[in-house]
Length: 152
Ligand SMILES: [Zn+2]
Ligand SMILES: [Zn+2]
Image (cartoon, rainbow, N blue to C red; front, side, top):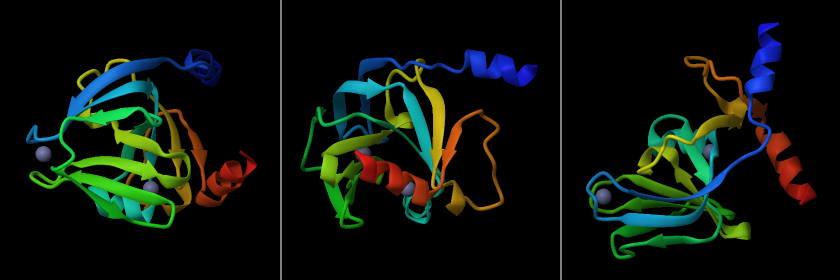
């Protein structure tokens, strides 16, 4: 019975909104025109190495404006992805998906975090055993994610 209520409450639609944010030191600010309120966590080895834990982010599409390019260092982490960080304070700013030119921004950087819903977890097969989120989310392995991406 409790499960039914959870499924009922789980949003089957999603909001998009304009949002702003900045890094820890404030050298890099940004505005996103479209911010998916359905956020997710990536448990892959690379993300956990990069931010020190699961990477909690939201897809902000292609329309992201930064206040300062000179304080952003972009690190090419794979053939399809790059990661940006503030070169003054080290804040992880975005995961950039090259084939789609999409910015996946950490939810923790945004000025308005009230609308976010924790919706999905990816690379669940690479999640270490020492933590588990209690949130009711969808879960995908890395292989499932790549299969999904190939369909598009
Ligand atoms: Zn900074
Ligand atoms: Zn990842």
